[in-house]
Length: 266
Image (cartoon, rainbow, N blue to C red; front, side, top):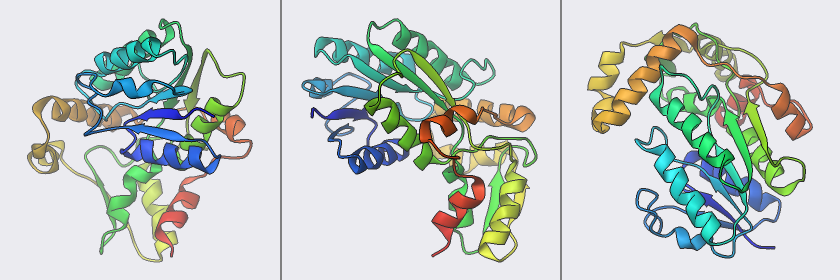
């Protein structure tokens, strides 16, 4: 069987997907730096001989449509018809520029002439793990701890992606992938307190502190985009439906408690 190419294979989503595909006996050709430069298209000739390509673009990339266009052009050049694009839940959200970029990229995928599927995962539960693994666990986020999210298990998203690639019937589909219910960061902290057996505080930090602290290491444009995302999260959270993911998995998706227990209890 020809390999499946995965762009961004060294990132969090790419690593999870690679593991899920290999667990099914699928060969994976990871496209990532230094061999592949998505900003220029260098290295995309590695798509030659692949059965499909999963397009994952680094988070808050300043030109996601350009990256996707280059991958699609290389796929056409090398006869790779099957394309799965990792987008995001609620892509057309004008308050979040990097979401809108994904909406534009979705349109490129749909008009590419390939056998495409678009996946729209919600925020990963795993994004909250670093604060819970600290000596004094805490969830400190630069947005409201009370707005609702459909936090989803990254492993479930990877498994669903592998299913979409290896089973028939998914060409031309757009799938929103949310976790099993709406929960806030405060809810996650409460569950984490039970899982860890000690108090975990949820705390909203000032986005300006984030910009002057962890965000200061980022280039200006990604920092601006993340601040816009935090502002949207502060007011609205981020919700997505759960039924499609359940159907793709053939079982209920993992809730916050299951994900925290898997990662934090040893």
